[in-house]
Length: 96
Image 1 (tube, rainbow, N blue to C red):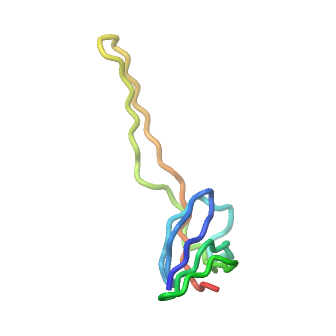
Image 2 (cartoon, rainbow, N blue to C red):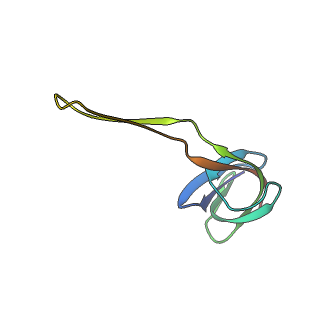
Protein backbone atom coordinates (compact mmCIF):
# COMPACT_ATOMS: atom_id res chain seq x y z
CA UNK A 1 0.00 0.00 0.00
CA UNK A 2 1.32 3.43 -0.91
CA UNK A 3 0.01 6.94 -1.34
CA UNK A 4 0.81 9.93 -3.51
CA UNK A 5 0.57 13.15 -1.53
CA UNK A 6 1.24 16.82 -2.19
CA UNK A 7 3.15 19.41 -0.20
CA UNK A 8 5.16 22.46 -1.21
CA UNK A 9 3.81 22.35 -4.78
CA UNK A 10 5.35 18.91 -5.41
CA UNK A 11 4.04 15.36 -5.32
CA UNK A 12 5.65 12.49 -3.42
CA UNK A 13 5.03 8.75 -3.28
CA UNK A 14 5.48 6.89 0.03
CA UNK A 15 4.45 3.84 2.03
CA UNK A 16 3.97 3.53 5.79
CA UNK A 17 7.34 3.80 7.54
CA UNK A 18 9.11 5.66 4.71
CA UNK A 19 11.14 8.82 5.42
CA UNK A 20 10.67 11.41 2.65
CA UNK A 21 12.53 14.71 2.19
CA UNK A 22 10.00 17.42 1.29
CA UNK A 23 10.20 21.19 0.87
CA UNK A 24 10.87 23.01 4.15
CA UNK A 25 7.89 23.18 6.53
CA UNK A 26 7.55 25.69 9.38
CA UNK A 27 6.92 23.25 12.24
CA UNK A 28 8.97 21.82 15.09
CA UNK A 29 10.64 18.39 15.03
CA UNK A 30 8.24 15.78 16.44
CA UNK A 31 5.10 17.55 15.21
CA UNK A 32 2.51 15.37 13.48
CA UNK A 33 0.97 16.58 10.21
CA UNK A 34 -1.91 15.44 8.08
CA UNK A 35 -1.21 15.94 4.37
CA UNK A 36 -3.77 15.61 1.59
CA UNK A 37 -3.47 12.32 -0.34
CA UNK A 38 -4.11 12.62 -4.07
CA UNK A 39 -4.16 8.87 -4.68
CA UNK A 40 -4.04 5.77 -2.47
CA UNK A 41 -3.08 2.43 -4.04
CA UNK A 42 -3.84 -0.77 -2.12
CA UNK A 43 -3.04 -3.80 -4.25
CA UNK A 44 -5.54 -3.74 -7.12
CA UNK A 45 -7.77 -0.95 -5.77
CA UNK A 46 -7.03 2.72 -6.45
CA UNK A 47 -8.74 5.48 -4.45
CA UNK A 48 -8.60 9.07 -5.71
CA UNK A 49 -11.41 10.50 -3.57
CA UNK A 50 -10.19 11.99 -0.33
CA UNK A 51 -7.73 10.43 2.03
CA UNK A 52 -4.83 11.69 4.07
CA UNK A 53 -1.28 10.82 5.00
CA UNK A 54 -0.30 11.25 8.65
CA UNK A 55 3.38 12.20 8.99
CA UNK A 56 5.79 13.12 11.76
CA UNK A 57 8.60 15.62 11.25
CA UNK A 58 11.94 13.88 11.82
CA UNK A 59 14.49 16.60 10.98
CA UNK A 60 15.24 19.85 9.20
CA UNK A 61 18.35 20.26 7.11
CA UNK A 62 20.01 21.37 3.90
CA UNK A 63 20.50 19.28 0.77
CA UNK A 64 23.63 18.66 -1.24
CA UNK A 65 25.43 21.69 -2.67
CA UNK A 66 24.60 22.61 -6.26
CA UNK A 67 27.25 24.68 -8.03
CA UNK A 68 26.05 27.25 -10.57
CA UNK A 69 28.83 28.42 -12.88
CA UNK A 70 28.31 31.11 -15.52
CA UNK A 71 30.82 32.25 -18.09
CA UNK A 72 31.02 33.99 -21.42
CA UNK A 73 33.64 32.80 -23.88
CA UNK A 74 36.47 35.21 -24.71
CA UNK A 75 35.09 37.95 -22.39
CA UNK A 76 36.77 37.01 -19.06
CA UNK A 77 33.33 36.79 -17.40
CA UNK A 78 33.08 34.06 -14.75
CA UNK A 79 30.69 33.72 -11.80
CA UNK A 80 30.55 30.80 -9.37
CA UNK A 81 27.65 30.45 -6.97
CA UNK A 82 26.62 27.62 -4.63
CA UNK A 83 23.18 26.72 -3.29
CA UNK A 84 21.89 24.28 -0.67
CA UNK A 85 18.11 23.77 -0.70
CA UNK A 86 16.52 23.51 2.78
CA UNK A 87 14.35 20.44 3.39
CA UNK A 88 12.22 18.76 6.04
CA UNK A 89 12.37 14.99 6.49
CA UNK A 90 8.99 13.47 7.38
CA UNK A 91 8.19 9.88 8.39
CA UNK A 92 4.89 8.44 7.15
CA UNK A 93 3.01 6.97 10.11
CA UNK A 94 -0.39 6.16 8.62
CA UNK A 95 -2.34 6.30 5.37
CA UNK A 96 -6.08 6.81 5.74
